[in-house]
Image (cartoon, rainbow, N blue to C red; front, side):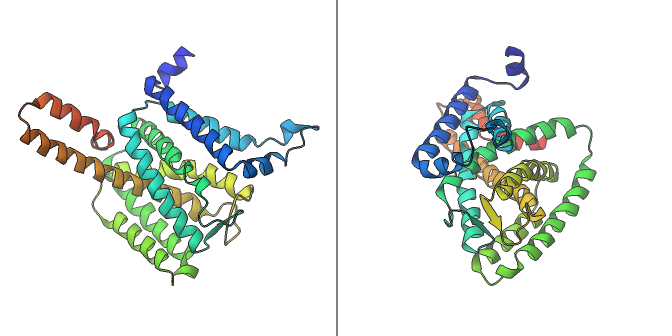
Length: 285
């Protein structure tokens, strides 16, 4: 167990995050108990219940739990979680208000799904770190640059086709404009590609579970549609850009603050700035 903890770089913050995760799951079950009760009622506990258990859901839960605890940093992870929650609320509102997808509870959007977004955002950051470690010396910047301009415009074309029936809705137009700006604006192509890949990779399993269990249904009735899987990658990319922007603004604020407070040493200022730009530092390495 200690070897696994060292391998995944678990620390005290990992225990705090895992405790918060379990508490959040418990709170969701308590507040929306009728939904949990309805789900559990589908299992015949008198028969071969182990064949009826949702092992895909359990697997997703276990993997995300392990990722959540890997190299946790509460100061950095808090902002990532907040951005994920806010971005998830925006995305869910767009999708359900335009009926691109519909939840079985017919809520637009359901509040119980929002906490899943910050958890997924933290898991995606962990997957990105792994990809960054594996590809940092094996894939050149030119390859990453070419890959970026291959997959991102292709995704945008797919998105345009998928959301075409809702093109008359202002939320869809706003989503298209935002994605176009994110793709066209200057960025670190290496980090962007790996964030997109990490988001799409986790998104496949989330969408596979949600659509096959009829928790949510897309208007195309696909289980899941390719667009939905890749959209998780685009969401991860957007969250990273917002996260990075906020960290940069925080760093500038700290620099101005230190300039007005001579008592703050340069060493302390550098330390505070480094903690506010963890992901930015990884993308430049």
